[in-house]
Image 1: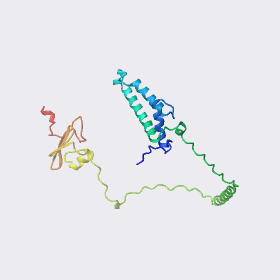
Image 2 (image 1 turned 60 degrees about the vertical axis):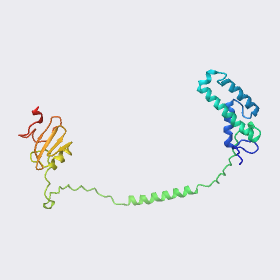
Image 3 (image 1 turned 90 degrees about the vertical axis):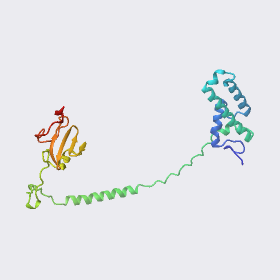
Image 4 (image 1 turned 45 degrees about the vertical axis):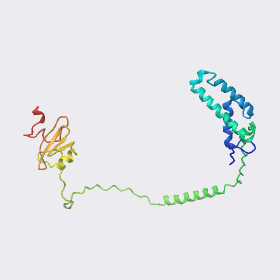
Length: 234
């Protein structure tokens, strides 16, 4: 199997490989197109300047470790190219290829504005027809609006529904209580609680209640006779 490393067989860098080679030269501080001898010399000089064996303070310096790793990767990339093709690419080979000249699009032939004249003639014709139609209509005399009549309820309309109950009374059914107050916060047997207030039922109808000042109930009186405040026992 032949591995090309993204390059042509004569050593010239392809479009995909050009950026990696330029980055390798930049990490080593060399100009693009330098030979492999300059690559090895620069690599050794930079490693000696950063290696922790010569500079113990770099042993725990993350920046120095990252710089050594970048130098090793750049040298390895250029060495692989050298071993594969016997040389490194010249500087001219690393430059991007010039874009092909863009062909000039032919200009459309000049046409006389005949279509515009035809549209203008049609617009004038339509305006003349509209003028004859509008001015030939008879003038309408405005008439007074007819007095509004109120439809009296007829005998066939059916009975008027009773007004909705707005207060809870002794004997009110449970459905009226639910329609007024909604779902109770707590229900236990015949007692529905709405916060600190409560309503008691007997056979599905209201038999008494306690309306707390903190959450008063819409009742016809504060408390029906015979209903004891649960706070009175304290």
